Length: 637
Image (cartoon, rainbow, N blue to C red; front, side, top):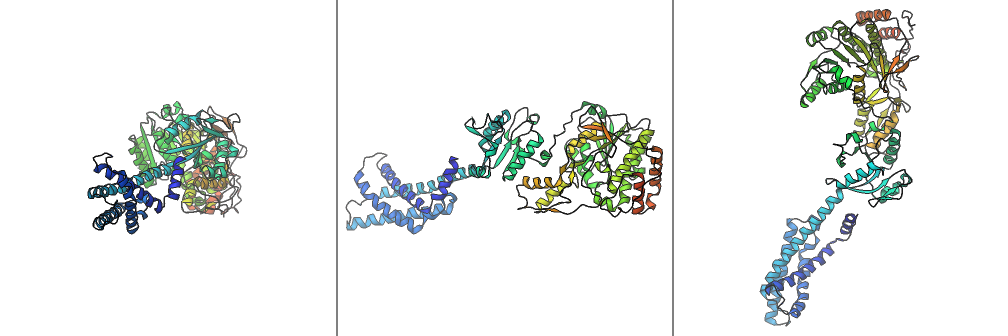
């Protein structure tokens, strides 16, 4: 606060005339110093003569400074040229004094105005040194204040409990960043109005735009351990609405060696604002199930597949076989793992649609566990390409599942989607057919345990709304949302993959595991929060454009189909979907026929066939809506 005042004062009042009079004062001081030095560092001189000579010295100093203009430079930007101007001004002063003294000696105009040449020379040297040095000292002083001022972060700490006090101490100890804690905020009425180390605790209701402006608050740091998501959401919404940054202190478990440092404070991320508690997996059973095993991951270069691969690399797998048809992303994953010093893996460019090539991989590496993440997942694209959706999502899954069964794989885990539930699009229906096929082979398998995991959207996955919104914000907007009421379930990629690994250790085979996704979230609200978290305002800086539902898209996603319910597992975030019993022999025959004849059918015929296999599939906002085909061949009990 003191530094603020000093700098504001200097900027307001440090005009050229202040510099001018300071220079005159230094000339006056230098004249005293010259006498003092001349008389052997003593006061054995006539003080009256000195006092009589001062007015003349100052007069000629005024003439010199006005002539040269050395006082006009901006002191805080002093450079070599400014120092040279000072040198010229002091030299002119010395010359004028020498001429005046010489003139007075010859004409004796003023008796008391006689200055020894030795004093004039000493005065010239001292004046030059003092004037130049004073400018650079003032510049350095200003630079130090400016640097400190620019780095000052006026902050409020939300939470006056133990975590808040620890955060306060960490901010005060931080040397790299200059934090100035304006106050604490707390909901506890017993704390409001009191002080912690002379810093006041405020009622949240008092934190208004006027308060923020008055104290120049830059950011609010939320320091509450085990804060509930809905409360974090409310706090964040309030402060981003006031136009200030919101940061958060990480959970105690993430403190470095149990200690908290200011550099651990981070920005609030969109993942924090999903109104759901994060899922933390720490299960030794997973380690036991994959240690010293050969594990194959299909679709390893995708968002889910790559994260499964990363998490598997943390265990002592004998070998991780990564296969994907996308060459560049697979190469990126390969290099990432190599950079981490991981060597127990092999990356192979291969396509799950190519049974011959995949079978060669099975023969060579003999995997014991398979995580099948390869899939086409973009709803609008697959709505235009049913052929590709079936070829990858259904027949690709069939290839991997059949080979897993033939080669006696211990466990096969398929990654499905909530869009397979009561599907309204080709992509969801193709994933549901894949689920049905896994159910069929699971019933017939004697050794391989087949497992399906079903969950919603993952934050940050390729093609998801979060990366799209980030790109749109970088480009200046607008953000595009298909419908103002559209909602989706979300979890982070690491959370989803941790649960996939966990579910891969459960059950006897044939189960569909549903993950607890928390509450569904409005995409429109996510868009607004992302704008605010980017330091911008909606709609002033960036607007949100509603474009209308895309082909195959529905407003609300579901994790359970009509008539399905769940049973609990030992993990509170993983449940088993209890589904309709289906005549597996009939379904398998249908899918086998599809495998043999699908390349002879056009898109409309393929969608008709999909609707016979998935009776709950009703096209939405699509060219296939008119196809109202209901199966008679499939026996659903």
